[in-house]
Length: 89
Image (cartoon, rainbow, N blue to C red):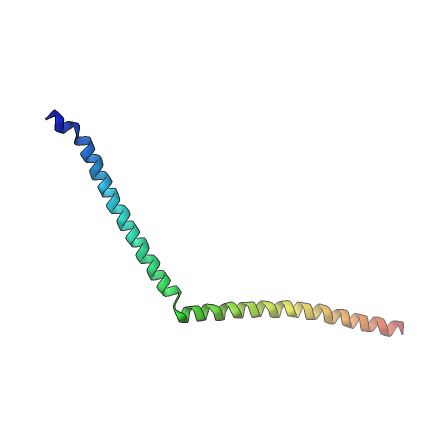
């Protein structure tokens, strides 16, 4: 009797470790399933095409905005320079 009681806490610890291992395995399976599902949705050929189009559109819009600023600044400078030339000559 005393011999089996001596190992009783050890059996409980082993059972807890077993439960923890099962929970960890279930968590890993859930995470893996979610990752696979997310990757499948995000990286289809159509999804990549759509992302590329959107990125190109955003880049083009930014270039247009920067170009407008550049052109306006240069145009203004050209006008002022031409006026300055006319005043001097």
